[in-house]
Picture 1 (spheres, rainbow, N blue to C red):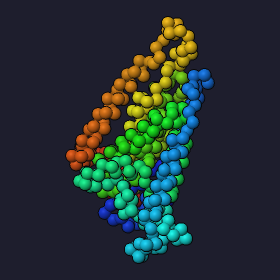
Picture 2 (picture 1 turned 180 degrees about the horizontal axis):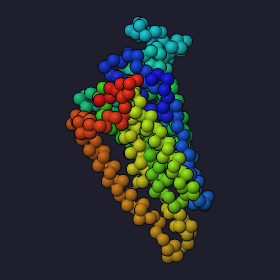
Picture 3 (picture 1 turned 180 degrees about the vertical axis):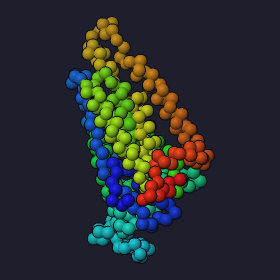
Picture 4 (picture 1 turned 60 degrees about the vertical axis):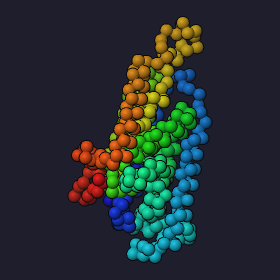
Length: 340
């Protein structure tokens, strides 16, 4: 399936055979469309987006460090059967042979050394920091470009509307949420990439639209468009070598965080908020917003607590859900799955 593309994926490799010929699918990016406000006066002050560009710079810088550590020419004799380093004129920054890594990047052993997500190291070696470090690693130039383009298209819009603090919290917690779910269900692969965090931003966009329903026009069109984008992204995750558990975990985390962090005053209150308090008549937030804020907070805390407890007890998520592995890969006559 080397020629298949997906709408932003998290790259995985088989940890039992790091120099195999199974090719992780290449990545493209998805974009999202935002609905329009019913009245320009109802929108908050636009923030200047600086966090998202800084995250992009940090990811690019980290990839350069990865390639320097990888140093393909120095280790070329170890994979002579796989071919020569790609773009050898780059010296230490040259890429692994395409048979080993078709995404133009480092070896899986380099990624594992620098913090890739791997069940044994997280659980048995107590390296919990990998739940965070894997978010900043990428399997290759294609993987990096796909993720960063996605981040720019999704993240800048959210940061301009809600500020760097809330978007930063959603990005990091969604990435960690994706890492936790991925580690619970996938034991034979290593995983890297920011897709859990990116799916979290996408999930937050959906819950933000739902919880702030009264201030948007073209509601149905915006909702349908966003749901279609989400479904396409998740559906692509059933292909082999795509860590869909990271996608799902990140999406669910971001979806809950959107109800908590991205709440806006209802439209009828915004129309009257310049009047004296006694003349406004309506509460700032709806009962719906309060209820979902509370439910989301409870579910988020419970989810992280249960997930972390299960993870560090060495539980295998597949033992508690016999069909869940199909969420990440569906075997067919053309490929097999080895994600348990």
